[in-house]
Image (cartoon, rainbow, N blue to C red; front, side, top):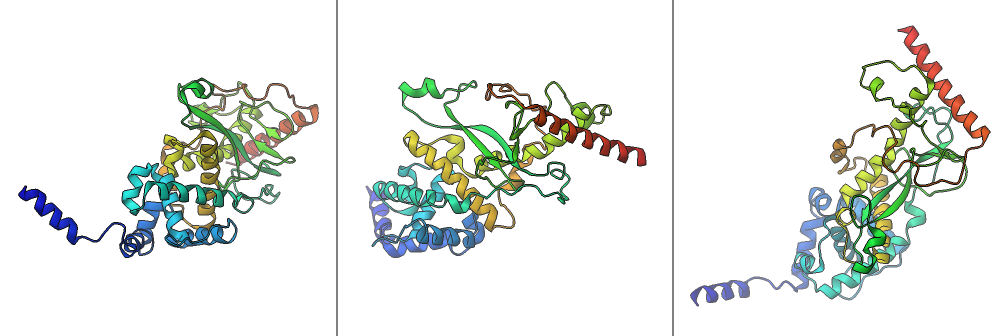
Length: 343
């Protein structure tokens, strides 16, 4: 009884969690006073967060309410994506009711989806004078393309439709990104670097099948064909999409863990995570999450994984497209031979 009285007196002396001034001080401490705290909580610094808040106001159509400003709505939204916290957990962080949090989460989600035309990077073909060793061989390429599995939660009756080979409940997401790991539109024309899970046809430049190159990369032997050189160059450049997906999942726990929202909302959340990922890459000179990609190797195998050949089965390359790949591979091989002979 004495302990209960002491606890009650202490709670009465503390400010109410629903006091507007207390909530404002809590928000200031999390996203206003320190870039370090803002990055930890929202995955971006204060300036980047302010820019995004302005965009969802001006373009997304979101506005302050009587009891909440857009900056607080956005902070709750980003915090949920970053840590996949449930309403019952986050309401204690932001001192809001579960209903308020849920309502404003969907408000911000709708506003972010309005930014697609601005935040998705416009594709720019690799120029002829490119000096990037990874990409200079692929003139007119506009990026790399691949699919990834993102965990989702669905009703029991629908689980069989979403069960993967690894027995996870997930949805397959197809993405294309530029060399700077920003996601782009998938547009007709030019071509993408794709792995061996795709057929070799116009628009998709894939590696040669049954042509490993890791022995050479590891220094145990020298390449002896143009196909080996091509596959090595191809994998080095195409690895950008693997790293972009890896960065996306590290940044947003909602994608790696899945959420409890309906499937359609989960799909919208995936899109929103991609858009905000691009916003961070555009606004911050140093991506705070990129250092965590060290576990993703620069080259991810021979590009003939368990899904090789499963996706596009009914399209074949024209003779002209095959000649294009063979000519590109021969140029790579000739260049490598010339450098080796000069040594």
